[in-house]
Image (cartoon, rainbow, N blue to C red):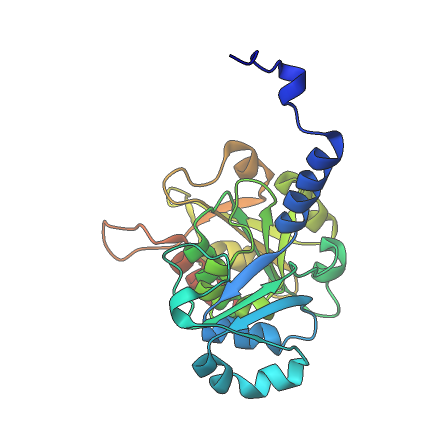
Length: 268
């Protein structure tokens, strides 16, 4: 019987380990968008760094214009053996695009008031990509300057989020910040009034917006469903406000609450 290999003998060579680390790091810096609408919007976005396009013949025909405009050479694939590394349940509709995350620039540049009173949304640990996708759609519809979320414990830029956003991910700045409290402080330095949404707050959203005034930029801060805003985030807000409900059941999905709050802020 051969002697059992020692721990050192079983270790991979250093160059193999480094190569595997490099591959993992490169993979983490890219994502796969899927679905006809998400892929089309990314192909039409000049700010997107596109790497690889995989489509079926049918999808290639349907996306012929955006593909031609992008200058990419698509890989034509069999729908039954679709080679893009997507989750098993991903409804790709025969189209997948590997891209790098969008870089919208620093928070102070994106959110700086420029002769107007912008509105931004801040999400405190909202992790569901479908909720964040819906929030991005509402933000794009109602003209929010940015949606801001922490880099950790928040929905990252993924194919699922892009599909839920229905194109808004390519148009609406989604800023991932290292520290949400620091982002709130930075916005206050830029002149923003920070309103935290809390169902138990004594003041209404309308009262908070009226107190802020029409000329001040506003940050609307929303927490995850269930736990809501964390204590530190609540303390960092200038005022806590609630969305008034007609009946006793006053709970809204976070994406619906974002849409209502953005609409109200736009009517100042």
